[in-house]
Length: 554
Image (cartoon, rainbow, N blue to C red; front, side):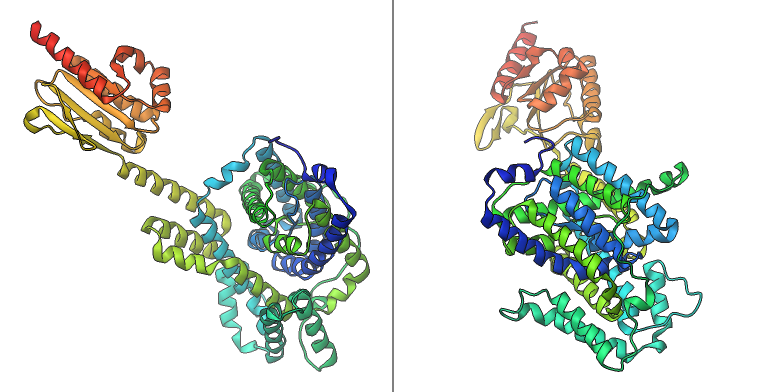
C-alpha cells in the first residue's frame, strides 16, 4: 500500500450518479449533525462559536479531499476540548494556532515515516482512561451554564478542580429557568433517537430549536450564545500567526499531544468505518491528510480537528461511500455559516451544556471502564485509573506521559516475570523428560532451558546459571526465546567468560532468528564457535556426550 494515495482519486474510477446522490444526502445530514456540535465544542474549548465551524469547514474539506478513508468525517471533537482550552488560557488564540499547525506538521511526518500502524502500541487502558477523564472535565465545565450559576467576580476557574470549587461556592446563584431549559434539552437528546421514523432528524438540532423557542416565546431569563459571544458570519480568513521560538518550545508538548490524539481518534474512526462498509483505509495517507487539515485549520482561524466516529457512522448509515460526502458536509456548513450564523446567537447556553453532556456520556465508554476494573489485571487497572485521575486533576499531557511510562514499566516487569530458566533434572543424573519424551543427559553436563524474551529487565538471571562442580558442558536451550537485547547479550558474554575460565564448553540449542542475529553482530557467535550452535536439543545432547567421551580419553 502506497504511503500517500488519497481515496478520492481511486473512488472516481467507478463513480456513478446514484452514488453522487447518496453522497449529497449523507453530506447534508452530517452537516446538520455537525452544526450544533461544532458550535458547542468551540465554546467548550474556550474559543468563539464560529471557530468550530471554521474547523469543520476547512479541516473537514481538506481531510476528506486528501484522506485515506472513503467515509471518515473530520472536525472538532470533544477529545481536544480540555487541551485547547488550556492552550488558549496560557498562550491565547495565537498560541493555539501555532500548536495546531505544529501538530499538523507532526502528523504529516508520522504519515511520511509510515507510523500509522504504531498507534496500536498505545495501550487501550490509556485511551480509555484519558477519554473518560476528558468526558468528566467536559461535564464539570458545563455545570455552570446548565444550572445558570454566576461565579463571583475575580474567580479563577481554569483547571477542572478550580471549576469544581467555583461551582460549589456559587450554588446559591442557581437559576431554575436555566435548569428547566437545559433539562428539556437533555430529555430531547435522550428520547429523540429512540423515536421510530423521527430519529432521522438529529436530536441535537431538535433540542436547539426547542430551546430557542422556549426562550423566545416564554418569559425566561436564560443566557444565550449571543449574550456571551459576538457571532460572526464572516468567511474564514487566511492568516499567518506571529510567533517566537520561546513560544514554540513551550508548545511542543501540547502539539505532540494534539497530534497523538488526532492520530488515535482518526485511525480509530477509520477502523470502525472499515467494518461498517467492508473497506480498508490507508493509515499513513490518513495521517498526512489529518496533518494537512490541521495546518489549514490553524491558518484559517480554526482549532484542532480529527476524525469524528459519531459523524462518520452517520455518514455511512445515510449512504455516504466516498470522500465526496465529507466534502459536501464542509460545503453545507459553509453555506450555513454565511446564511444562518447570526441566528446561532439565539441558542440558550443550557442547551449547549445539554449537548455537551450527551457528547461526554457517549465518549466516556464507562461500561468499558467498569469492565476493565472488574476483569483486567491489577497493573492494567492501575494504568487506567491513574490516567483517568491525572486527566481530570492535571491535564492530558501529564496523563498520557505518565500513563505511557507506567504502562511500559509494568509491561517490562510482566515480561520479566514470565521469563524463567528451567533446569533439566535427571533421574540418577541420566535422563530428563521433554514434553513427555525421555532425554538422556550425558554425565558432567547441565542443561538450562530459557522460556521468554531475554532483555534488560531480567538480564541478571542469565549470568548466574547454577553450574555444578565437575561439569564439562553447559547447554542452553533457546527454542522459546523470541528476542534478545544488548543487556541480555552482555550477560551471556559474561557467562561465556566464566565457562572458558573453568574449561566448560558452552552449547546453544535452537537459537531463533532474532537472537541469532544479535549474537552474530556482537561477535558472540564467533567467540562461541559456529559448531557449538546446534539445531535442536537432541543434537546438542549428542554433541555434549561426544565431548565428555573425548575428555575421558584424555
